[in-house]
Image (tube, rainbow, N blue to C red; front, side):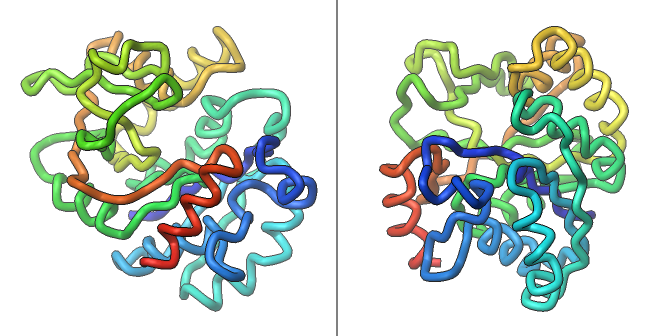
Length: 245
């Protein structure tokens, strides 16, 4: 198993930090960045290799690659997304289609979360699941969240931001365990998704899989403090959280 990080996004709402850095390299605890926290989690669960999808300001990640490898004891492979500033992340994850053949834990490059999330996903393996989403069933939901409706017997039925929060089982937090056996089907669903509309999310690719009859499962993460960092308010919360880990 390897780690996979989506770190190609521009994060324009986090300017001026993202004038020179991709969102994943915005500091959240001293010099510690969002990417540092994710790599630290991956190292703690025993991973030794991580692929990182880069795009916007990718040279900043390339410049830090050797230092990050040394700090976390990981071999990093950087994968270029040539459309990072034009298209949404369905295409970005498709750029990592070869990486997901190895079994991966995927983490969005803007999610600050504790290693308990990765441990929960690993503990949920073993019953034939091919894709398992980390799901927050505790948080009060609003319009911006990536909401999920789950059937206990059939897994994910719906995943979208465009849903009444009252209908949702919980929020997808941006971390997924993907077995290599799902790689080809997921890559095809992602391709169908971004070819339909390049502004779609990779979660729309998950919905495409569900629509095709593929079972996508979830693992509730419990009462865990985490945040997706989209703007300066989120960043302030991320800094409060990150210093606790």
